[in-house]
Image 1: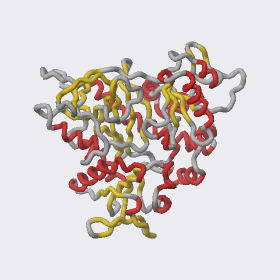
Image 2: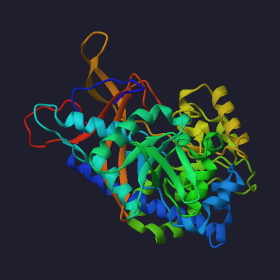
Image 3: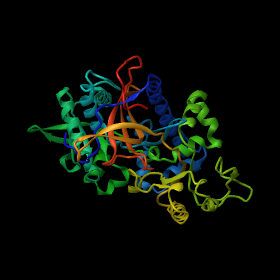
Image 4: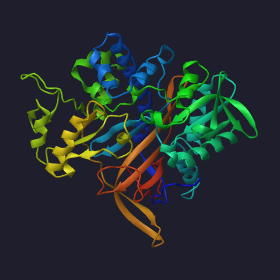
Length: 454
């Protein structure tokens, strides 16, 4: 597999305890329940059963045609079939910073799982197993195919071209497993009245399932995007992730924490699941510039011990009090990766004020959220220094990205990718100075030292 980007290589995977593995294994069903609840909340808001401002917020800044398309009865129950949260291990436990709508790293994690499975003098227990990512992705695709004839297309846009090598590798591995999967560009597919078709291996065949590896905000730049939507609308092809921008908003975390919606979430999720999710999902607020009544405050938002009644009050917060992150909620090129992210305590007050005002001014077209900042815990690990050709040591903070694939209504853990960034980095994401490795189960009773531990 050709790597478009580079990273630091560690001699062994990142080891998790059996308790941490249980956390990740149990998390998938909780997140699937959250998506189901969010989908129902949006649908009932559209119908007026729930407050209409919910759908109003989730639709803010979206083209009307896309909103109407997403509300079609045919897609009513459609949910993402790949669930990938970004999780930061902190001193107080795990924290989910966001849910990635169109996650990269599926092919990368699958490849690394195979490589590290054979290292360390004996096969470490890679989370998901040597082929967990491949088999999980395949099960998900077969579930969508549901006896339909035809091939499966992984459609990668030009905007996402950096991920094309890993998805091409993934498709090739799946073909070896007997599944007809092809990674293609949008211009390679052909539209007919009977559906979408693809020319492969000297013949043309129908596409039964299309895996969407492109963002919904980029639809106008994607060739044949309208034809793909038409084919899905007519039931000629199954598409995942679904064309549902309301399910791709980071402001969903704000809805989970909103006190008015607590009865809905208690009924939808159950008390235990709700408590678990509100514990690991940071408090989040949608930066709506609409004025509040003089006697009102913003729910659960405080500067120190003082409740906040106006966003402008945040401008005066001290550096210590600015333990917040500002980032686009979704449906924007700025919502991808680390672009558009501002960390309050990591910038001068003038820049903080500018970021806050810009976020509020952007509300009509690109809503932003304010989210509690949680600092990742430090841990030590080794990596290969390419320049010195020797092992080096690094102190860093980790972002753990578990992959859950949904089939037959169940979300199962298939693998976990760890991205460990140098300790001075506040925003944790893939970068050339980061170590990227799969996670494995630590052998609690083994006498063999395990250097990369959480």
